[in-house]
Structure formats: C-alpha cells, structure tokens
Image (cartoon, rainbow, N blue to C red):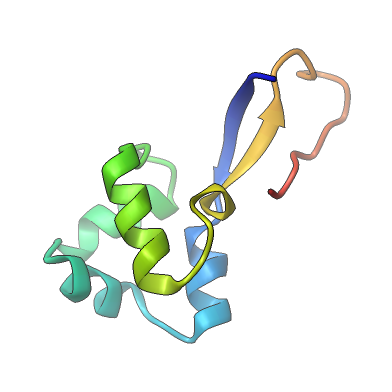
Amino acid sequence: MKFELGRCLLKDRLIETGQSVEWLAAELLFRPERIYDFIDNKRVMPLKIAISIADSIGCDVRALYELIPEGNEGKGNQGHHL
C-alpha cells in the first residue's frame, strides 16, 4: 500500500518523551530552526534524519508523521498513526 505523508508528529513525540527541540538539535548537531521546520511542515525529514530522530527519542520512524493511505483524499480521513 502507498501512503502520503500527513502532518509531522515530531512535536507530539518530543512531548511524550519530555525532550525539547533544543535537546534534539544538540543531540543531532543541527540548528534548532531545522527541527522547527520539520515540526511546522516547512520541510520533510529525509529518511536518514528521520531514522536518527526516531533513534534519539526512542520511537518508530513511522510515528514521526501521520500516514494517509493513498487514494483516500477527500474522504474525511484524518490519517493513520502507525
């Protein structure tokens, strides 16, 4: 099955783990603005970065975005959390 990316769930995952954007940025040697761009859906995380983020905060990489099955646009689908 093919999926479209919905909204970024990184902020939710950080809240769940009690970590901050600044902590994650320091952990990965990124500027905090880059992390905020992911959170605000201004840019999509490349797979390598998503894997590093998921490893740092202890979640599955698929938990970083809403995943919407392709072909369900306009059917009231709110996205699936995998």
